[in-house]
View 1 (cartoon, one colour):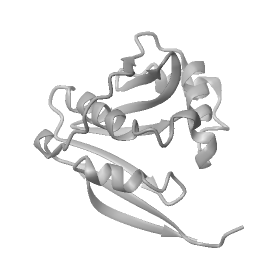
View 2: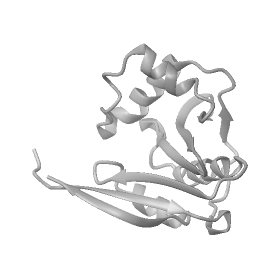
View 3: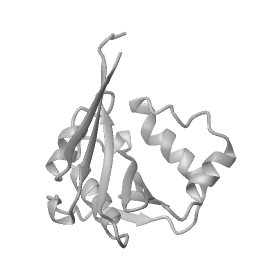
View 4: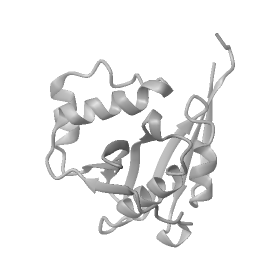
Length: 165
């Protein structure tokens, strides 16, 4: 087991004009979930996050999941490719800010060039909310090795870093 410190990077975009979009991939279909199903969100969180050690919500109760997913400030978007779940993202609005709360690809679709397109769509979805002045996200060194560079290539800027361990 490695004793390397974990670096968490917080990134922001303060104008839609900062977005450097990646071209859309025709095989990638991204849909907003029109029905709030906290069980589905829990499944997506585990399905996508298992490879990256996402554990902060594994102990959540049904009531906690339901409160998040059914909030008017929350959106879930699911990406499909050739009929399979390719990934997903969740957006959470707080005032004028929208956080990309969770973002990721499923294991079968990593390394196929879909990450930049899906992130572009996540950012565009966040900016579609009326009155948004900032979109932000965080990633850490436990995430996919290309995560930070993908965020930066799409136009995000690091505004804070934290080192743990």
